[in-house]
Length: 157
Image (cartoon, helix red, strand yellow):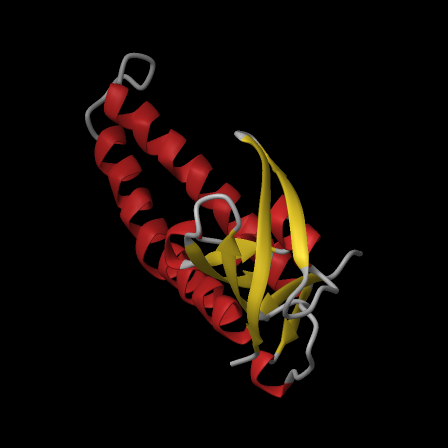
């Protein structure tokens, strides 16, 4: 079984989502199925079919979360140190073409959210950054073409 790296914060967020799905969504969906059943003929009952589909999606997400949490390897970022980029690092970059500064934290696949500056360890930019240090330049093959970044800062917090 392959371990799934994640930060403590990411692990806690997944546990909260799992608890919500099992203690709030599951009972709500079961009630919706019961109510739809009471309407009679199930073969032409759109409410029943919609509730069953919601149940299927919910149970699938619950199974996925339980699997990921059982294989989680929690990495405490606050205990990491060093000068090179690795999992959990917050990296400040400058795009060498546009001079635009960007700041990313490298996290597990399930925690990634580019809008909040959290990129997946398996993303092209994170893979290019791993092992590099301040002052290094990295080339990243992006969908829009190759981008070049210089690493300005590496922190663990």
